[in-house]
Image: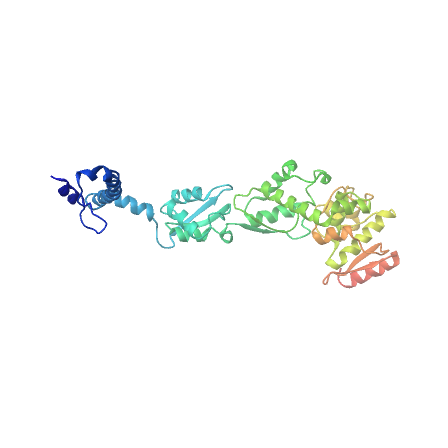
Amino acid sequence: MNDLDLNTLLGAEDDEGSPRRRSRNSSKRGGGRRRRRRRNRGGFIAPLLAFVVLAGIIGGGGYYGYLWLSDALVPDDYTGQGTGEVVIEIKAGQSASEVAQELEKQGVVKSARAFTNAISNANMSASLQPGEYKMRKQMSAASAAALLVPGNKLLAKVRLPEGLRLSQTYNELAKQTGKPAKDFAAAAKDVDALDLPSYAKGKLEGYVFPATYEFQPKTTPKEMLAAMVDRFKQAADQAELEAGAKSLGYTPHEIIVIASIVQAEAGRQEDMSKIARVIYNRLKLPMKLQMDSTTMYALNKFGTAATHAETETKHPYNTYYVDGLPPGAITNPGDHAIEAALNPAKGNWLYFVATDPKSNVTKFATTAAEFDRLLAEYRANGG
């Protein structure tokens, strides 16, 4: 084959698109140019051949490869809201992929990849919160993701009102969580684990703060009590308990004891600061506190009207019997009672009587004669 035939076959063309004729004298001059054109043509043929091979694999026997590619792009997923019930726990520190694997393992979603895609599409990858969630079997990944939100956590809501004794608190916790009261009483004995403030002197009474709590089903009694002690510390910091106690000349523990008596004796919030003032005035005289609520606590009874025989009980919590404050709190006081103990009203009162038990109205007196008149009014109202 001569030079013309070879160049024509290879498609060598001149600038006008016609095949080039070359003399023997021009072969060296065009050699480098011809090699560059061949390299360019080879760079085009290689991907073309790769495409032809791939098309041959897929079209002529690559069915399984196609399935693999399809699964990688569209992972297996269920449809619908699912059926049955399963509780899934997201643990602290778990990644989204770890949660996805657990969901697949429990049969909630068909594939972990489907779930990670779903939460990524919903911008939830970084917002999964620890806790327990009620879900269903064989849910679509999108439906599963929609249930893993804070509002769907399984939580036991516990509300503890102000003024409960510790024994009442155990019963209330048992009632609202379904855990035995004895388990809370046993947990209370491990005071070191509850992280009580040092001024509490190892006494839990008075430091289980009354509030509304939300606990996960697996929260232990010890963890619940510890959370309530922690909530007390928050309230104490907010009220500046330690600084306020120092300015009044009392320890923080003594302020909590006073607040617990105020909580037990007061029928209305507006009377709390006046009752606190009566306590301080009696302590300064000195004069026995003679608070019926402390006597009833000593006898493990309830109420604020002790009989004469009950007031003669020899017990460190009976303030008819001992001087000064009892050794510990008699209730778990709330914010208002603590605030009243730190900020007593100004006045010379030494007595108070809930003259109308139905309306909880309390009246105050500075002399014994005034006190006797208030007692007569109390009796006239059925007290």
